[in-house]
Image (cartoon, rainbow, N blue to C red; front, side):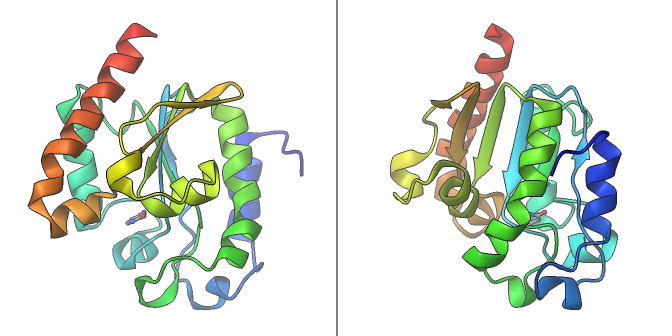
Length: 185
Ligand code: URA
């Protein structure tokens, strides 16, 4: 699907009934931020607060992500934040691969418009669907992986940091790499 305008993608997402998550969602969560962002953060899918509000990463994990973005001298308005799936998987389950594949053309269209220099994969789900990497986050995090005209960096999902304090240090090292990458760009 070719979209003429960025807002056409949002309209398509709002009207999508392509999988069972559309039946249980309260709101679609399209994504938000700068259309000129150098960095795009991609999570797995909306949680309860995101489903209620229609905004990505605004619950507890999102508040931590926001703090980390600010700690490297950026704001949410400087970056773009989106997810692999645009509707909440019930019970916070990982998105089913079949539904993720159906939803991915929306994210690909967002990426094609924004053309970020760096795509940060937050946790295993975006790392699997965008990079086809199945290794542990312990092994993959912080690696800069160039594919075509984009560079990707897997890092821990912020909710993992909320459950395991020990991951905060390596995650912060990853965020410092994001800062260097965009400052060198
Ligand atoms: N977790 C995600 O992966 N995405 C969100 O938008 C919120 C929580």
